[in-house]
Length: 56
View (cartoon, rainbow, N blue to C red):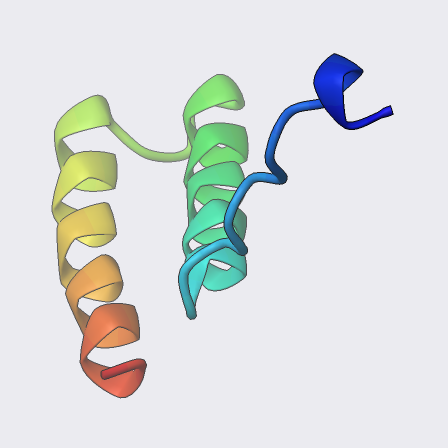
């Protein structure tokens, strides 16, 4: 079996699920024209930095 398999992927980094949730939230706002792309990018950067600062 070993010759027909590959190594498992490493676990996702700490905080990645929060980052994915943030992207999903901002995407929904963009799709319903409730936020501009520029504002979404600004919000993502600010909130992602906050997520990363809590996961170190």
